[in-house]
Image 1 (tube, rainbow, N blue to C red):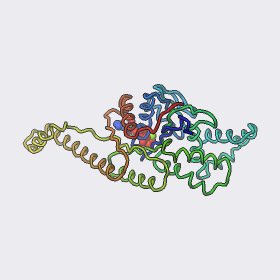
Image 2: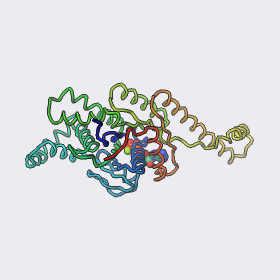
Image 3: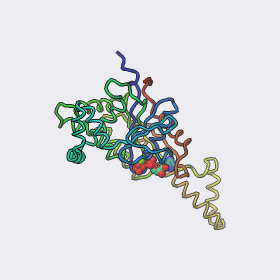
Image 4: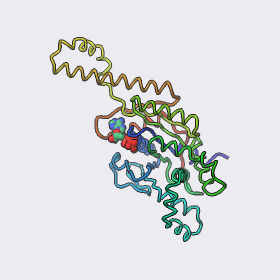
Length: 321
Ligand SMILES: Nc1ncnc2c1ncn2[C@@H]1O[C@H](COP(=O)(O)OP(=O)(O)OP(=O)(O)O)[C@@H](O)[C@H]1O
Ligand SMILES: [Mg+2]
């Protein structure tokens, strides 16, 4: 029997990378572009930060999916809320569930337990991607803005680690559901974001190898963000070289401009070398996104960025939910 239609598509797309490289920007871009394709798209962030408010200039984003316009919803996943969802789903008596949830000591204990937060997050993501038991999922695509790479690794490795520790029980069943989603190349994908700089590229290559060796999640695109734009059109390069050769003879204000342009060209060449390194050292489709001069990339920029990533890492199936 073929699987239900809603299971034949890359429903869950995770985004990770070093701090500040543009993870939230790429997550927003993916959601916008996928919404433009008619897919109900949800952005999920962890903790109290709601980056979408700045990036998409929308109203408040909290623990419940909020419609933020252009076919996109957004929410944050917070520990208290994830615990509530988990307990109410698994404890059949509402009064008992409330007592457990009201127990401050238990809450503190669970927050401090290694792996619990990640297990709850995986549970929540599994529920968002596949829907509650017996229900059709509310969203066609769930784009998850993971914190920096350490968090992503923790999250992806938790099912395997806990699998060895847990006996049979609801948490094991829960993790089995999410492991199924994460490990299924039709359903989930992890995009890596980086910038064309030495440290970031090195870290990305290390992450890539580690994920390839240990994680079962399918990798999507490798996004090289904030690529400097060529300061001089390529057909003018020869003319510019002549100007550089005559630098000592140029009047100072002009010479200064030429030196600046030369520095920009060097930065562009360096960025190209970094991208080249990523292309040859990984087997991922590499997508280059230009660095925009404005503080925040515009909405059109974002949609274009998202399209580029979706094209590089095409969907695995049809959606009908
Ligand atoms: N292509 C781009 N061109 C210009 N600015 C960009 C681009 N991509 C991202 N930025 C800007 O860079 C900054 C960092 O981007 P973003 O917040 O998406 O990174 P992040 O990886 O999510 O950061 P954090 O690790 O802090 O969550 C933001 O100010 C964003 O507007
Ligand atoms: Mg961010």
